[in-house]
Image (tube, rainbow, N blue to C red; front, side, top):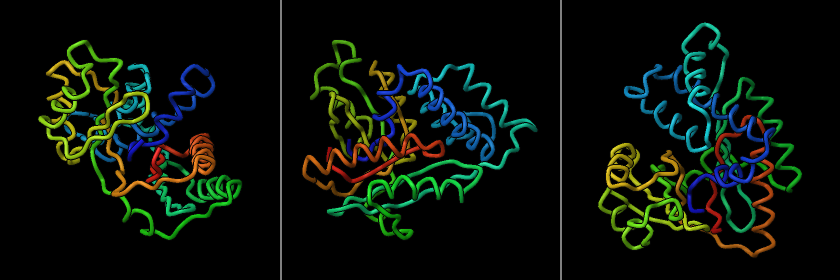
Length: 245
């Protein structure tokens, strides 16, 4: 997993668990509601909402849930104060972590995060001390196993990605290709790939590490457990790190 959110992989293991699936749907609802309040209810004129809807779809959130979230955020009942927050964490051997979330109570979210980090012997870092290790990019993920026969060839898929405007490519475990593009080109690159018959798993704005840090297997397992614990926290939306998986 390069810069692509660790939350994505953690949640893929939860999709068969009804309770955990409900938590995922709740997180996606908040993501959509924040986007609507910031830029309106039309995905065609609200780029943030468009990405939020695509993200929700990638987690198999039903369209009726998505439409309900948009409607709720557009009306009076959607005036609940939701705030986007982000935190930075520095782990051992130079591993940097960015946690992004949405909450109606920042202090409560901060306390929940600290409690989780304490269990793993980690602490929050000062603002800006981690984000310099990353750059903001659009990330399009394509699962090789879901492609038709024409696009099951890795080199051919990579070439199509480059032709769509890819700045960088990274193969995750499980034969998933992460295609990194300039954030402003995310929508066009996605459309170009889809028009060629390539199936897209997700198209999101991510924090991509400038360099990846390799650690011992035992430490890697600790970080993976941390990512899972963080995602169990209701306010957490995304988890990024420069850990080489």
